[in-house]
Image (cartoon, rainbow, N blue to C red; front, side, top):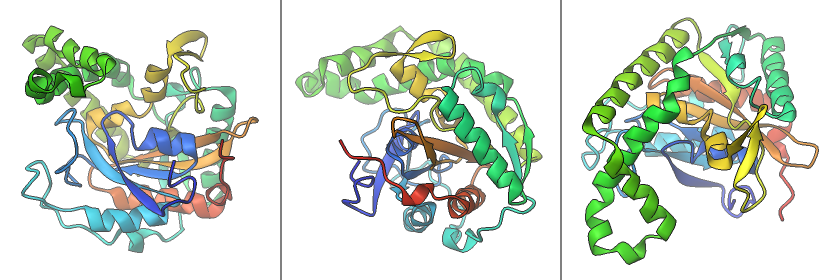
Length: 309
C-alpha cells in the first residue's frame, strides 16, 4: 500500500502463494515473483523453503527491473540461489512485442473470474495482439491438482520451520496462525512425497506450454479486492473462501517455480484495480518484464492510481 500511495518508489515482497502479485493486483501496482532461486531469501521469515520467493514491487515494471538487477544473484546464505549470471533486465525493456508468443490461459479464468476481470484481461490480450504479439489459447490440465498438493507441501514445510519457535515462543504467534501451522502435523510423509510428484507434473506441463510460447497470460486474481474482513466470495457459479479465490491463479507458479509478474490492466466500475499476470520460462525474467513493460507503454493504467480510503 505504501507503493500504491506513492510513499516510496518500491518495496521488497515475499511470495509463497501470491503475496507479491496479489497485493500488486489489488493495489494497482507492478510486482514480480522471480524464478525460484533467482533471488536470495536470506533474512526473510520462512514459511515454505521450496515455495518461498522474494521479489520487487513498484509502480512500474521498469522500476521492478531495476530492483531485480540489484536483488538477484547467488548468495551463500541461501543455498537455493542460482549461480547463473544476472542480466541487465532494464536493457531488455524494448517496448516491442512484435512476434512475442503469448499463451492465453482462458480456460482457467473464464468460468471463475468476475465479468469485469475477464473483460479487462481479454482486452489486454487484444492490445498485445494489435501491437504485433501472436496470441493463442493454452490449457494446463495439472493445475487443478495444485491447491491440494501445494497445501501438503506448505503445511509440512511451515511446521518444520516453526515447530521449535512454536514450542519456545508460542505467545508470539496469533492464535489463527498457530492453528494453521499445526495442520502440518496431519500431512503424512507419503502425502508430502506424492505432492512433490504432482509438482513435477505441473512443472513439466508449464514448461511444455512455454516451449512454444514466450509468456503465458491470465488475471493475477480472479476477483478484485474484497471488503476488509470478508471471508467468502463467489468464484464463478459457486461460493469460495476469499483466500482460496485470491490464490487460485498465482499459487500454481509458486508450485512450479516459474517467474510471474502482475501489472495493472484496468479498474472495476467501483474503482478497484485489476491485475494482469505474465508467466515466463525459468530464469527468463527478462522476457516477462519486457512483455509487462510493453503492455504498460501501450496503455494508461500505470499512470492511474486507485482512490485511497
